[in-house]
Image (tube, rainbow, N blue to C red; front, side, top):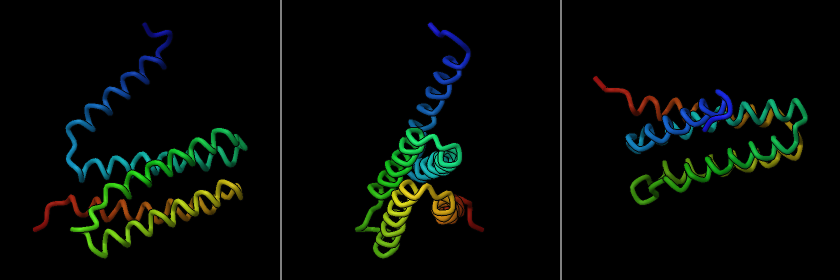
Length: 131
């Protein structure tokens, strides 16, 4: 069934992720999206540095897909200005990623990473118990 241990490992990781997603609440799902997005941004940078242009394009597209998923998960009725501001930040990140892809700019990817790490920290803080 599996030709090598990497195939088995990939299958195990995919099924483990499926279990995590199935049992996650919406807050946990957002944090999982941020984790995946930040990992993919690191891959994007490595592809730019190594001049692996096809891989870079695929990584940028994955990042944009995740940002679009985060945007589509926003509840503008309940979230009001916070949801609108998050949407604008996600749109800005998409714009910067498109630009970084064309300019081959690791610095612009770093800018997006910084913004998203700060947002991720905010989401993590929301999940902590309050005294």
